[in-house]
Image: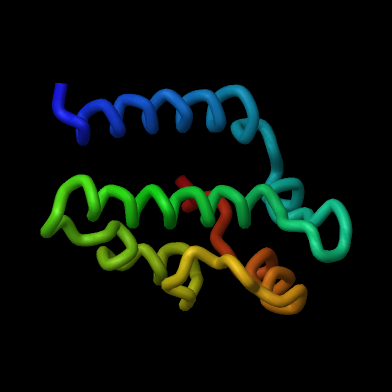
Length: 105
């Protein structure tokens, strides 16, 4: 098995678990909710994880463009290209308010 195929199989399993056992029945408000000031929402964690996965795929398969570069930012209603670490509280709040949560992976 190629490393790319192994990685994608593992990622598919994790996505299925998260989407079908955890996120599926949550409302948009629940996905955007910050449990406490300074803590991140589920939507933030989903975006952060997806950005790292998108970046990792370019390491596994050189020459592959990131999904982000395929009009994903517009669909997500975002302008940030980073993995969203080091955001201020205000930036996190803005992210939670504007992200299109139903487009999250």
